[in-house]
Image (cartoon, rainbow, N blue to C red; front, side, top):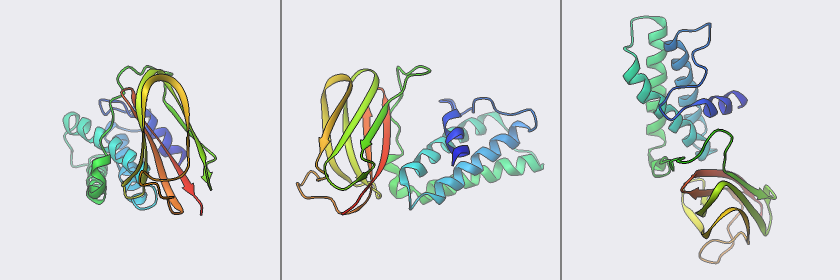
Length: 204
């Protein structure tokens, strides 16, 4: 998981990977390995952690666009690995097709190195009222949404006033006023500066 998180953090907006390739591998090998990891992770987490699966798919699709423009696969071991990686990302895309509406990324316009959005749910295992806290690199409006593992939107809170940080108390109820059943959910913060997602467990 640590390697996967590190890989995701190194994917650039143009599909390149920061500090790739290393001194011991060809570009085809390195990018093929990265695509394989992302494709397999997206498929593996499709049922248990959809947002992580989508993050892997998004990264894989970015790299795919770069690879298709940068390389012509050769009849070699490294070329075969590159093709295998591309195939795994395509397979993951098909597996997540029903959840594709959430594969769209909010552009991270305005963010620079060291700036980040944060989203925190306290406590992480929810049994009742919960505090949702966030911070942004600059003042902005936003929307907080609670989704279930299928991507169904259950709760929406609009942050109408621009702010750098804030918090909101949530009573673990949906927009219909009913308490949500126990299970795994995702809190999503969408702002003009980007998106942040935090998973949590609701115990009943």
